[in-house]
Image (cartoon, rainbow, N blue to C red; front, side, top):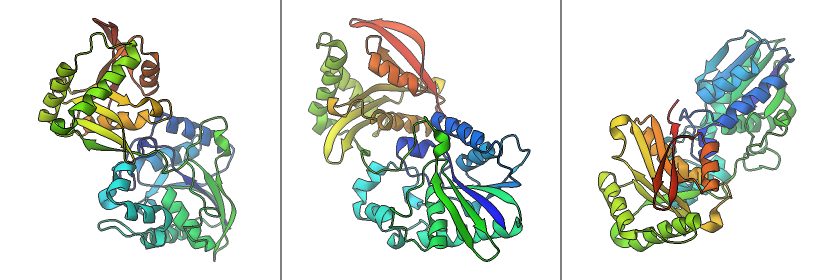
Length: 371
């Protein structure tokens, strides 16, 4: 008899920023590191004989948590990888859902019939992953092992074991980050003790997989969308300062046009479904000689503030500048803008300097990019 703890990886960038992360090897988030610590505590007194993981770093680091203090090395396998979504890799869910709504619906709700050129199918994942789990079970007869994989991959394995269709999310739920399922192998098949248990996270905010609230972006067209840009900037200014004293729309719009001339995706109009709800303005030339990226404006309509959407806006400049091999990301925030300052501090920024403007003190904030 082999006992297997089948574990989904911890929270990674794709989960946090609402991006497709099949074979993309995104980094673990700060919250993900806390989840790993909680998982390590759960397994502190569980005797493990071996630990396996997908070869993607979010799985390996989760497996290292389960193995903490046990003097076990993590054995990796590409067969335990997540479904490779091909051309959708590292794309924002909101963008994909808008561009290919029928395929996206099928990807979520009709998995068995989803097919995308250049991507794996769910059936292919099911075959490779189930075969690998059987191999691990057979090679560890009489032992207890932990196996760390990915959300879709684990659901495919358990669908094969139970016969429950992937579309039946009631009986075969979307698996949570670091959630544990316990299996037993008797030499001919698997029995399931329990599935999708993340009780070890306790008071930690638990991650769920949801398509609600995904934002998309389109490049701003300055000849057509000048009024939209200026209305966003004016609302942002009014929200911080309580008036429009010192606001110079022509100056800020001219700067935005300069940013777009440097890179046509430097200024983005943000949408929720078909409603324009925000703006991201980046200055791609500023700081380039010092490997630094600059954000000129992150803006959300008032109805969308304090609802968890801000991180999706911030994700745009994070990856825009990471793709240019910038090492740091900077912005200025009015000292009186306590809500924005608190948000940036939570997302890894720290204050590195101060400046002044006609409207008052400005704080220069910075966070590192990349691993």
